[in-house]
Amino acid sequence: MSRYAGHNVVIVARNFNPTIFSQLWLVRHGIFSEKEVEENFVLTPIAVNLNTSEFAFLAVPDRIQLSFPNDQVDFKSLINRTLVNIVNKLPHTPYQAIGFNFSWILQPKDAEDFEKISRQIFVSSGNPISKHFISKGSRFGAYMSTDVPMGRLRLEIKPTMGPSSAGSQECLHLAYNFNSDLKDEQKDLQIMDFFKQWDIAHSMALEITEEMGKGWSS
Image 1 (cartoon, rainbow, N blue to C red):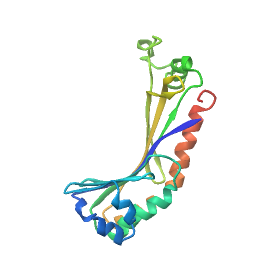
Image 2 (image 1 turned 30 degrees about the vertical axis):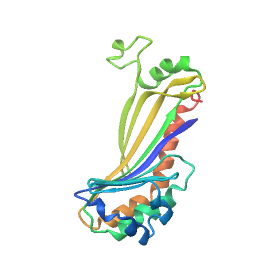
Image 3 (image 1 turned 90 degrees about the vertical axis):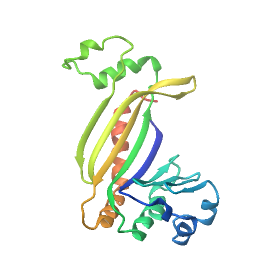
Image 4 (image 1 turned 45 degrees about the horizontal axis):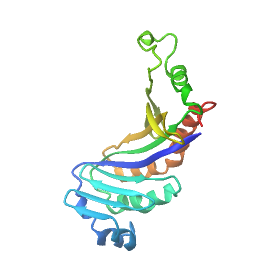
């Protein structure tokens, strides 16, 4: 069983001016409500930041980012209200790339099994350097990437410490990045097409996570 560790959407831009996102502009275009911008809203010459219980919005000169602190939200609805709305209102912004980032934690049922499990997953008998990592204190991870319909999938898996009933426990952190570089023409339409594939990307990443944790994670 996997534990949610955060998702976000990032639009990479070049020389973007965050100050366009004034409270008045954001409310006028239905991106945020008046109540949302009245609380936890920060506007400076180089950054705009807004935090709510459902999302965290950040705009700086090189990117626009929407993060989700918990998974008890309607991801697509929030993306449509904020990022889709922004791209529709600012189609000529010099956008460069777009990405989805998904993150989960896998924690072993028995903490004593962590080293054995991670060794079985990541270190094959034919690995030429495995002889250098034979102590019980050895830890393992992986980097993988492949082409997918929406662009490129990159997965990084690293050992980390996570909370447990006993305080803290070793676990695996899986971080997925689905990324697409934008072509020169009709970048706004490319972004819209990418947004439509949120469910596909999310399901793909979750399936991989559940397959990896099957049988040993709690």
